[in-house]
Amino acid sequence: MASLAEVLARETREGELYERLADGRLRCYACGHCCPLPTGAIGVCKVRFNEGGTLRVPWGYVGGVQCDPIEKKPFFHAHPGALAYSFGMLGCDLHCSYCQNWVTSQALRDPAAVAPPLEASPEALVRDALRLKARVLVSTYNEPLITSEWAVAVFKEAKAAGLSTAYVSNGNGTPEVLEYLRPWVDFYKVDLKSFDDRHYRQLGGRIEPILDTIRRLFAMGFWVEIVTLLIPGFNDSPEELTRLTEFLAGVSPDIPWHVTAFHADYKMTDPPNTTADMLLGAAEIGRRAGLRYIYAGNLPGQVGDLEDTRCVKCGETLIERYGYMIRSYRITPNGCCPGCGTNVPGRWSNRFEGQIASRPFLPGSRHLLNVLRR
Ligand code: SF4
Image (cartoon, rainbow, N blue to C red; front, side, top):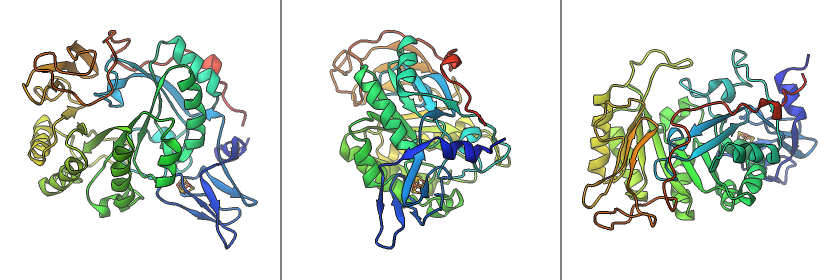
């Protein structure tokens, strides 16, 4: 039986995000590692490789498909209540020891991560998303940057069908990949894991490409939301959180910042779980830094009004949430507070059409997706 790496090496085509260097190597630009690849070499992500002077990249499969409320991604200022049809491939350019998607992201590094790839086409994915009345198609679960050619193929089909599109990403991008994605990606969530380069190096990356990506995403007009998983003892010092939130507020005080609770996962089982008080303390730091839309996640009902969207001018509650569930929605069709008329930054639907699901579910369409032959 073929190994997972052998199966995935078969499911590839020539990539678009690379150049040939003068010394004969290839330079990949899909993520901030910018790997220089001699013939026969594979990138840090383990899914892109140089085969005889051509960069081969993943194509034609998914590692998983799931229907999520868009609030789970989380996007709170982009079509609240929408169903986000979510797909991932396999592999990642980082190796976070607390990854909550490790079965797909670490499939090529960790033999315990068994995620059988499923054959897929852009047309079948979009057809299924429309059948389920999804409004957004999302590349997530593994790191989407490293499989950007495939995501763009799916998103071209999605946009032709009138859907919005999104990336849920670690933000380890390059100027080249962001230019490539700009016509096809509407919403972009970055997981800003820390504000300390030493921490990023523990996870297999560097902080600078991530900060540069956040600045560029905002300047290029993507709708951006940021998430920080608050891990006690790792990234929760007031000093680090102050620098992190001051950086975000410097890019724009209107970027929503989600600070979410950690629970033990994968190989990180030592730190205690994040408490509601820790989230409230981090939110207060963000508020002092100037951020205007701060949300506390993963502890529904325990964080006061930090699940809700409020008008920054008059304080009126505009969207009331419990976990992923929308309890009330009062934003006007033109994206304003109904009380004082203040604009609320985001990408709003003309009207709130209710919520298809407030919890994830499988699409029940696996007949569309055959497990790839080993
Ligand atoms: S996606 Fe990133 S890790 Fe993978 S080959 Fe390209 S630059 Fe290297």
